[in-house]
Image 1 (cartoon, rainbow, N blue to C red):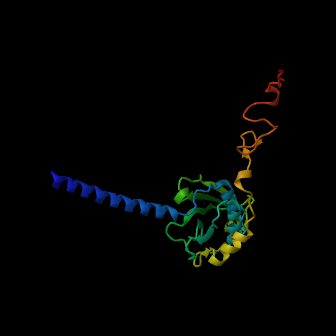
Image 2 (tube, rainbow, N blue to C red; image 1 turned 60 degrees about the vertical axis):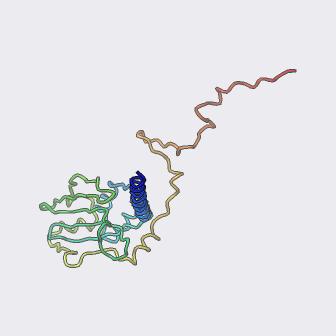
Image 3 (cartoon, helix red, strand yellow; image 1 turned 180 degrees about the horizontal axis):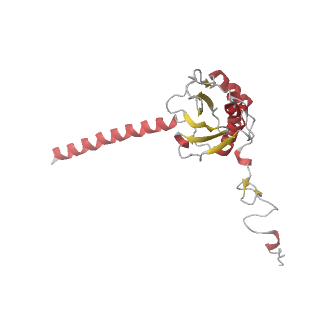
Length: 224
């Protein structure tokens, strides 16, 4: 009986050590995880691509939209005479390349006919749930030169042999040039009607906890 209890205790101690090791490993893994929970306004990202005059202008526009602390780097490649792919990524290791786990989104533009084309944006990683519909682009639309140049008859793929990638030294420049943002605590909460409401915890008109001034009972003077 004593031998049996010894075996059970040994087994429990061994499993406890193993579980403790797993717990420590999980904590360390999450401690080094980058912030990828910041919401992205995808409509504005798509519009930034439509309006951009070139890769550096697109970098600026995208990082003015993104409200996280990281800088989004941009890679641009012409896959062939009609197709261009733009990749947004967090260059965490400052390699100047899109490495495993760094991709945030891709925007693919394709010319489908004379003066007509389409583009689509797809999210990756924490943003993998986003897939835009196929968005139409035409030569008559208000487009920046990054897209409109593809409709020119003499267009030559610019980034086929030498893709554009945000240089690591530009990351600090982009971060410095990004406009300052107010603290999230002072943001107003928009409503569907277009009106603005104060952030949670604010009060208007002196009202507190749903009690209006007119509802308060009048003071009564106590007499001896």
